[in-house]
Length: 147
Image (cartoon, rainbow, N blue to C red):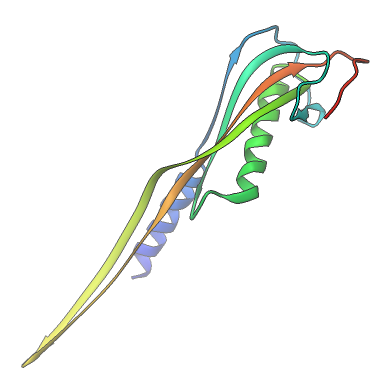
């Protein structure tokens, strides 16, 4: 009974570690900077240059992942923007979708003479993907900015 639980747990960990990022360069990339220097905007600042369209995702088991998944996606968007030399990202949206499920079960029967007993237990969990969409931007030094 312990072996199936261990293998299911390892499968869940392997799947929940999957994530991806992608971008489409639409402007000029610059030398990489630190992700800590990348500012997240909900509205575009008054002056900026587009660098790239970004997508990043994080998978989670047992639900949509909550704030932890949002934080992972934002970190991945900032990391990707920093690699392109963008010092800002305009967050355009987040989405959730179920990408799969894992299930398992176990059963046992016992019988003797005039009686029989059967017991079964099963369960499943969903695997969800949270995806963030953003624009990597470069805000010139000294330009007015808002958040």
